[in-house]
View 1 (spheres, rainbow, N blue to C red):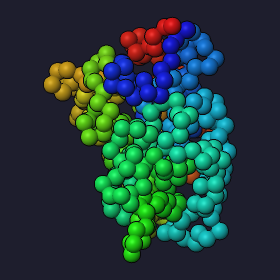
View 2: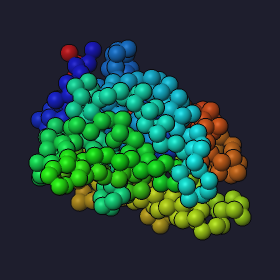
View 3: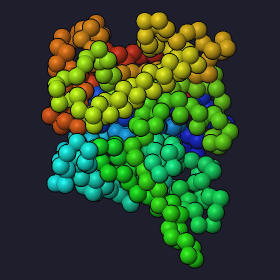
Length: 392
């Protein structure tokens, strides 16, 4: 039986090797993520004595998530199984993506943000980032729209702003409600209103300072893998983990990659507002490819895919020495890839429909595809025994 680490040991730079789980944003396509995570969980549970109490939060020392990935990451960091998260996720999906009564057009909020907050409270309760029942480290990525800055919220008690700030009026990050931090990360523009978080107390004539937060997917970190690596190793983030092929393992799981070769689906999509949204989506895809390229470039990666025709895979390793071992699992919503990798024949029109991030009717097919992807893509040989937890 494996010896599971305490929360403090998960974050302690002197306890290694270290393992990071990174989960992309992508709306209801997070069901794909859960399908692949289910296989990862089963493989790692078997590796650790088939303990029914095994959780991904026991294995991974840090779990990072953006948007829909933040919901999953927060739940896993609290010790939920993938099946438990799946149950919460399906109920959340039906709640999150009910049309708002106040939505009248393409530039309005489409869904009711208040119901989202209520649903997330139902999952995470009144916990804050300093709650004592976290099993492991957590990073939730959001974007502060009023200042244009990326905000990676974490439960690292040594982080610069966790216990306070540069001013006496600053509200320590540890006091932020978990549900609100996750809600901020999921506040996708056009779909939901921003989340307003009070980050500074009133003093004298000064009013309380409130930050306006939106989905972390509109930052470069919709795929938070590179950010998680930076947080784990850069001095300013105060974790100070070591690097190396046998010292740091990063597992990154996507929500499906759209087919870039499919054009506009209808004349309606040619209007200016929709073009703007499509441009934002394309930029998010570009950032995701850039993150994946850099991660391949810095690592040993048995799952590396071809990024594009010219680059192929991002090789050789920068400087000749890998910073980490990197595993990336994702579904490419492209007919040729699906036929080759999953043995599936699905036409382009159906795949285009599955790209939607807000259609609960897609959940059964995405769920089936995610489970199949887990079975076909996740291999035992990908997980180096060097990263197994020590036996009792």
